[in-house]
Image (cartoon, rainbow, N blue to C red; front, side):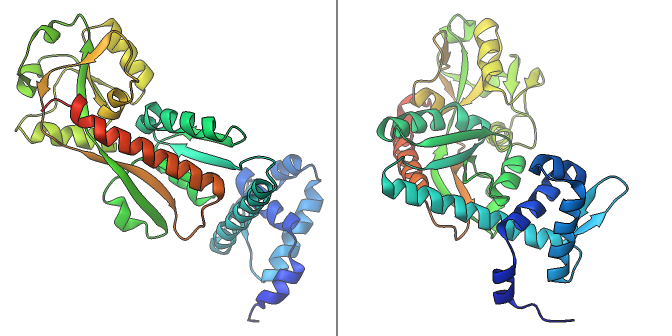
Length: 323
């Protein structure tokens, strides 16, 4: 088998060919990709055949309905994502230097970070950088990591499962603060009249808890296990904060929320934390990025601003958390 010559490929491969390969993978079909790219199916088939000929391998497996990347295709697609990401960053850097705008950034937000940390960070960031173009995409950790590795988002903000840091060496991690928890009810709940409550006093209440297999749920499990208790039997599960707060406001349900929500003033009127003693269990919140990728000016500013908000949360959690 002929050894591939990298310099020859640099001279021969075109960005349009790389874009075509990327779109075929995204659509899972040459026909669908041709419609998306505004070209004919035979023309796109010729482009794919030409690229495969240059590499001497099949990049896609032909299926009865559509195509899927081969191992060779997966390797190339990862590099294509990096190439286009770096090109977009180059454009942002140049435009930033020219002073036309302050760059762009796409942020992946885990649900709880999207409720408090990020709104405060983005508010401060865009106030100081009105020309910044910013996109926030909310999702669970699994879907956001797929988007991050495909270079469709620049950075993830949210809870960091500790075990992940050892399993994903291609990623870089930065812990901003340790998120504490508060138990909340509406202002008229009978429990608000009591002081010196503990978790055992709340076991018979109706709870709103996050779904299993989430980092926040694991933290709540740890909170109960610290005092030798099981999760309350009467509970519903959701990771939707608007639903959570709306139900607490209009019912006798109680819930657990991150203390950053209270520290930054995002808890709605009509809801307040209970004065209840809970174990000081914490969960790390921070950044996840592709390892080794340089920061653009926009990402640099975003990370600086978010770190400052995290410092504010850390300083205020001691005030809003009941021990």
